[in-house]
Image (cartoon, rainbow over all chains, first blue to last red):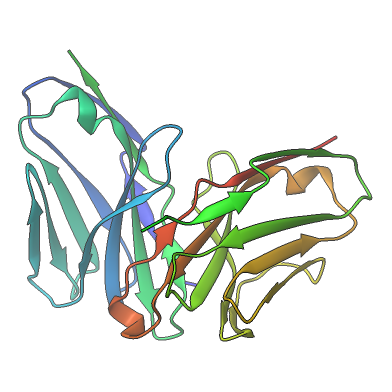
Length: 111
Length: 115
């Protein structure tokens, strides 16, 4: 099982501000990196899956980048809105196919 | 298309008892994975089933077991419950075609409390 770390554990951002946070994963035996958004009382929802070094994905105001050589991914939220409040999970899939999740970054957007 | 469903949503058991949780995947999805989440921890992988066979397994004791039926529905069983088994149990389904890039779709979870 891969060791995936996310930082910070939580953050507060003012509505309209942009923010970003990190997912670190072992770069050896890496196959894919997944990002999920998990809102309170809902199921985790898939945001992105990335596999190639330098990959960038975008969905509305949320985007993500991937660096497989150094083993990290950034998730960016541009112009944060209250509905962006959620826990963002990253998960790395290694060659054993298992998804190893980080503990998440909880984002709270203040109006 | 209906999403992943899990039953029951909440469960209270006492130490030593056993429990069975159920997961119905999205129609057409053949892979079902189970995860445990405890406070402060990420989702911990329990096991994955595909075509009624366990295809992958996490680092959990043998008290945790599962199975998958021919309609892809899956059950997870925990025997001899311990206080530390109190957690949110999530299942996720996927088509299981392009395995490494495949997105998993999660159910709402079953919250188990062991007293």
